[in-house]
Image (tube, rainbow, N blue to C red; front, side, top):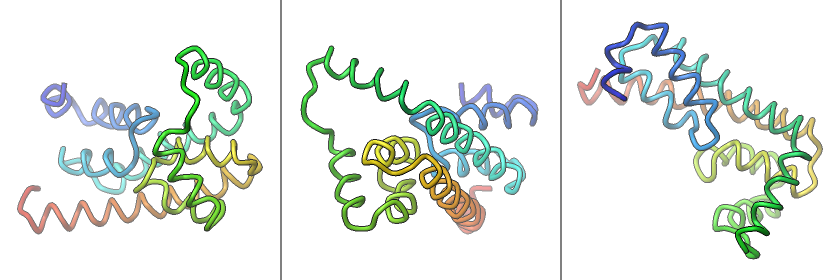
Length: 158
C-alpha cells in the first residue's frame, strides 16, 4: 500500500494522510514524518495530520458516552477486568499533572485519542479535554513537522 500511496497523486496522498491521522491508532508522530518522507509540503502535511486527528478528538468528545458504553460492554464480553498498561500510565500522569500534563504528554506516551477517552473517563469535562488536546495536538504537530523536515534533510533522506 505504501508504494501505491507514493505513486499516487498529491491529492490522494493528502487524503491518505488525513485518513491515517483520523484512524484511532495513528497519531501525528507517525503521520507527519510519513507525509514529509513522501515529499509533500511540510505545512500541508502538518495541517492535514492535525485536521484528521482533531476531528477524531472532537468526535470522541461529543460521543464519549456512547463510546464508553460500547467499550465497557466489549471489555465485559472479553472478560477484561484490569486496566491496560496505557490506562495505568495515563492514570499516573493524570493524578500527577492533571489534564494539561496528560494532553501534552499524550502524543508521545499513549496517543491523543486514548488520552482523550481516558481524561473523559477520569472525570474531566468535554470542553477541557477538547481544548487541551487541541493545544497539545497543535504543539506536537509543529514539533514533528520541524523535526521531520530537519531530521530527514540532515540524514539526506529527502
